Image 1 (cartoon, one colour):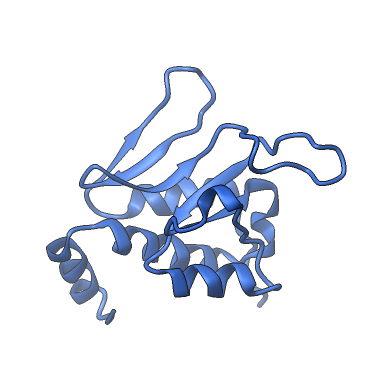
Image 2: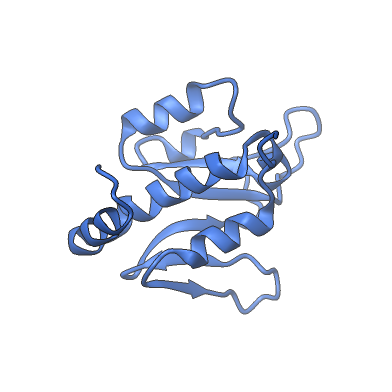
Amino acid sequence: MAARKARVADVHEIARGMPHVTVWERDDGTNRPVYQVGGKSFVFFRTARPDAVDPDTGERYDDVIMIWVESDEEKLALVSDDSTPFFTTPHFDGHPSVLVRASHLGELTKQELTEVIQDAWLSRASTRRATTWLKEHRLQR
């Protein structure tokens, strides 16, 4: 059976499903939440910004999701892999995150998206929370 393609609803489900998550909702009616653990963002639905634009039209992408990563090495691995939709912009040089357009999430499986979001949560959670979660899921970091 083929793996199911990831969807925007999966981002919300996976991020909300992690422990100790709070969701910061904007007051502007855009439905662009920020998912946080311990007051630290790990998934962030961005507003359209000048650093991410369509190369053909110059229009700002209005569906960019920022996802934190553990390290520069992980970021480089994700954005360098042509089989994934992750990218970055010069604005995020030195920032531990990758970008992905919501309209391109289907290039990932739900399982791949789950792993990236879980890793994002782990990168921002306290050591105690991360260790507890890993132990409960019989995983190692």
